Image (cartoon, rainbow, N blue to C red; front, top):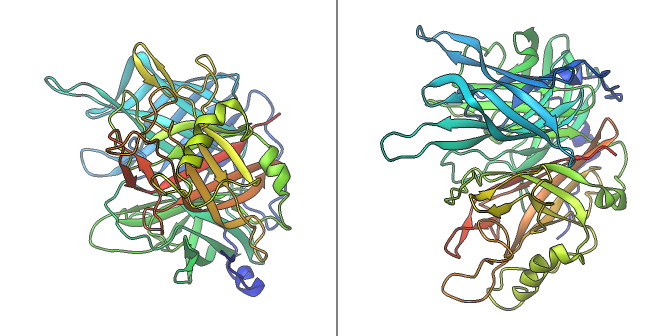
Length: 491
């Protein structure tokens, strides 16, 4: 499929400067110069989103990573008894670095169905990856206490975070690439899956000229809107619409860091509907567009940590399968670890269930979640104590858009027969058969660099043709959105 030919003039008119306040990024500059990581002992503070975070009803939070004390803290805006929105600490804990590069977070103070209460013993199983001073991805945890015979449920609360130290300064338009993040709503039709945005500032006014796309690629409706950046208790954050901090129903908060990471937190509710600053009606995560075409062999050859996010994947398990700590790039396609994935892809290419249109090519990154099945059930544990990550997912980037460096609008995702809730020993068999299943479906990916490290953000839609699909526990293929968010591991 031919990549879209985006006019350079249109690109310039849509430079994306989403000021989604992650304090360690330190404000947007016109050329997004590299940021020097803070010295050991400093605290990195970020503004968080754009996922639906259960610890924060408003969908926004401020997170701090204190590397001198190995402590994490999260504050969010919640309503008190007088329905006044006030900043409240909703999580605190400690973190330790695992050999894999993940940070293992133990929550001493977490959110529950009855409020924000101490955890004794501390709640374990939360994870984060960080580019210090630039941003972080995290899978924090929320506790829903059962009653009677209903067991306590620990659910994931994924978040992306970016620097929030200064408002953006873009005298000339600067381009960003982004993917829309799926949410847990019942929205059945996407209005945007990915896009490009040009951002220009004049004083405190921040103008976003966005061109959204549906996976296909199909053009969405371009838009030009203006928000306002100010320094608040959330840090330096841009709000859209202008002066909308008190309008919880349709307020979008945007942060852009100096190193080029972009996040927006969009909480929509009530009767008013809006597509927001980026045309998708929900949050985005993105990166500044590279100045020249990216080096694909270097991207494929790097190693990454991050998360796979499928908010509608409600398969019963002993862990929350909607968010999976994952790693990519540690395996080549011909490694023994990838044999189940490759065999199931081959078994469904032109035969079997016939849901794999093409075999992965050389521009493919292999990886998957950290999943181990033990006596107490399954666990998603990237500490390496229980083994390395699985190889059950492949991402083929495809051809880079010739007019948009870092944009891969015709990517492909492959899901193998060992993707959870299945495994190598208990493979996914197509419903009503004994044949192993595998699927492939279209996706779009954006690639950039943040402080010299590659970041890859991938979006797949339940409304594409064919749709993104994941297995349930009975051999069925269930259409649902999927996002993959990766930071290159520091060497």
